[in-house]
Length: 115
Length: 118
Image (cartoon, rainbow over all chains, first blue to last red; front, top):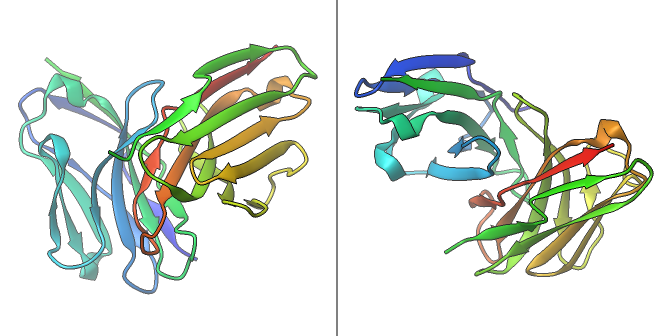
């Protein structure tokens, strides 16, 4: 069975500093990988996704993520964090074997941005 | 593009009543819609998957008679919480996957509905 792990429950970062959020997955084949962001009381917004091809994926709001098959990871990065990046971030995995495209979500990482 | 709406955004009801939540894909046709439940400070838990014109498929542990799902058209799915109780209070989020897309294509999420049962 597939699984998604986000090792960091909570991260505090200074505004202007770099940010990296970790995501590890367990799946037998190449999964579909997503990063979503959720502001308080809101739904999820897609930041970026990886299906195949270039392992470095660019997303919205200046985010990027790199798929590393050897490490089963899909870490999210941003070079310079803005106060508006404070939110909950979810990594999600989809599989090629599920015909409906169901996703499994990690537990989430809460990002706090300090002045 | 790819906007999903939910209505209502929040609802307060008395215990024992039923509440209907609508999920609409505004600018695309959704073959498949998903319903999630999210508790405070927790991740999303998939409740059920619904395909247009067919019965929903519920995840293990989710009561199908408690959470009625209807996917009547390619742009609308509804979740009805029947005989709601305080333990049903939660944040309910729907998502939609566009028609014709390959398996694994992106799910687009609604803004969520907060339900409080008194």
